[in-house]
Amino acid sequence: MVSGTRYFQNVWDTLKTTLVGMSITGKYLMRKPITVQYPDERMPIPDRYRGIHYLEQEKCINCLACARACPIDCIEMDAVRHGKELEWVSFTLDYQKCMFCELCVYPCPKDCIHMGTEFALVVEDRSELNHDLLSFKGMAVDARIRMREAEKKKAEKEAAKKAKAEAEAAAKAAEGEADDAAGGDA
Ligand code: SF4
Ligand code: SF4
Image (cartoon, rainbow, N blue to C red; front, side):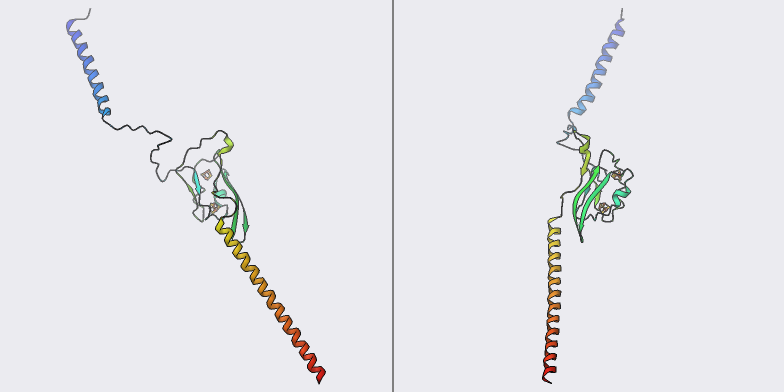
């Protein structure tokens, strides 16, 4: 049998703890919700976050320095060189192996491979984690125009050289004929 004092003490404790609990809940009722509706909304990501790489392809010179620096060989690239221009085939980074250490970024002489702030590597098949970082395959349009102009200039130069050589040969032949004619008259 609970004594009268004890009974009122229990009622008081119940009311007090309920009020304390409700006061904590009440504080949060007035605050804005902080739930982020990912993936439609995202929390800000620090600039130095080491996420999925991005490549400034137009600056890349296919020197392989990044691939050689990678401790687990996840970078592979393939490009065909046409004089000073590059025709890109692939530049892949295998995120099945990458440990986001950033060691591939520092040796780049052109500062063109970076770690971005993208992080969502959600795929249905593991092979899809081998990302191609190229934004365009083949040659960039302006590189192709530059190459055509260089080829045209080269062809014009060669044609001019050939025409000059032919003109010189013709002049020499004419000179020889004139000398022969002069010799015959004498
Ligand atoms: S971040 Fe590290 S593991 Fe990933 S590609 Fe670069 S060097 Fe290799
Ligand atoms: S180190 Fe830089 S320039 Fe060289 S291949 Fe890698 S990304 Fe391109």
